[in-house]
Every structure is written in structure tokens, then in C-alpha cells.
Length: 114
Picture 1 (tube, helix red, strand yellow):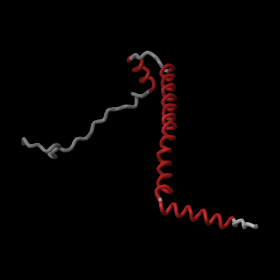
Picture 2: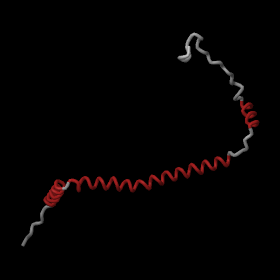
Picture 3: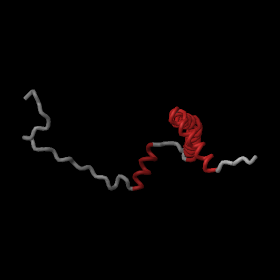
Picture 4: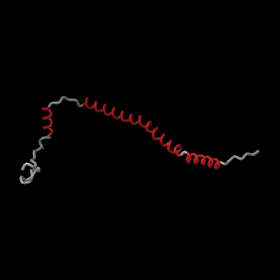
């Protein structure tokens, strides 16, 4: 009453052949369905993570902008700004330069009324 135990290689071949038969019979179940589950499931997993990323970024930018506005807040006066810019020498180096025009005989625009 000895029963032979099949070798692991035989069992592996038998399981492989079942899997191959199943994949040949129903290719969508073995390839298409796992692919669709991964794509659709991945979108549902990544969507909350992406939303969280943008919310954190927006919150950080808003707090930084709010703090910056609080710290740099000063009353604007045009006269003070003029004197401040003049003292910095911003206007001391500026010099108006005339742009050269084309000669008078050269048409600037093509006119129809000539």
C-alpha cells in the first residue's frame, strides 16, 4: 500500500499547465482584468494623495503670503517713495535717448490715401 508522492517538479508542471490552459481559454481574466484593476484602483489610491499634496502646498503658500504681508506692511506715500528712489540713485543714471527714425523718403506705413 505504498503510494507514490509526486515529485515537486511534476506538481509544478501540472499547475503550470492548468494556468496556461486557463490563460488560453480566458485571456481577459489573466491579463486584462488585473491590468484594469491596477489602473482603476491606482487612480482611486492616488487621487486623495494628490489632493492632499496640493492642499498642503496651498496652505503653506497662503500662510507665507499672509505673514509676509503682515511683516512688510507700511503706509504708502508717493513723496516718500520719490525721495527714497532718488536717494538710491535709481534716477541719477537714467538719461532719455531719442530713437532714430527712418529717413523721410522711406515709407513708415503703406498708406492708401497718398
